[in-house]
Length: 258
Image 1 (cartoon, rainbow, N blue to C red):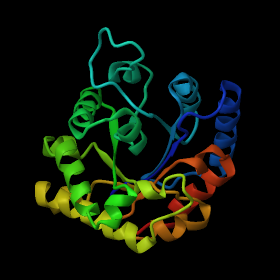
Image 2: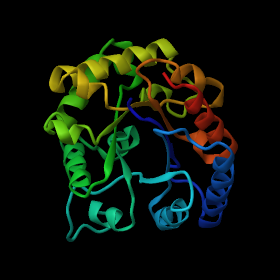
Image 3: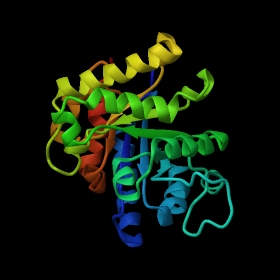
Image 4: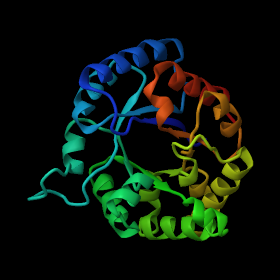
């Protein structure tokens, strides 16, 4: 049975004090909403708060992820953070290829593939994002876009390596807009992604890989989204910044075992 995952992407939010308070609130709430076996809760705060989050996580029910990583191993790359640095702080997961990185920093699929390689070499699980913008959806090109992103970003990996990857589908037109892909739209794309994995790696491996939904998932729609057979949880943005909302989404994950 593949893992269910809810990962909170805080993006560039919270001061140190606010981050500490949010983590404390999450820890207290998680003690009352303990994730079920094979269910994983991940907190992805900004880089300055990773060590604090990691220290607290050792006594709680959540894991810690970073929001990005360098494609380089080390060297004169001012402002970058390497996978080895993350590994040295016991960071278990890392988001790569988020739509905001693609849009604002011009990240290509080939660059994302290099970041994936760095993470896997340091035993960190990548959460690899894919998804189409509104114009691509309206032109009915969403499947072509996602196929290219998955193929160019991941299909250089071996069977064993791909099993350590989490995929997050984020319809870019639904991020921060209040719009959400319908449960049917989400399931359609998640099933398509799993079919791509099956074509490349076979059905047994494809059925082991968690695929998360990442487009304005919130307490009011999480249960319906997570009920889909190929939706294995969520990559949560705005709703992860309020402990009560995030915990309701965790509870929806716990209730959505298939």
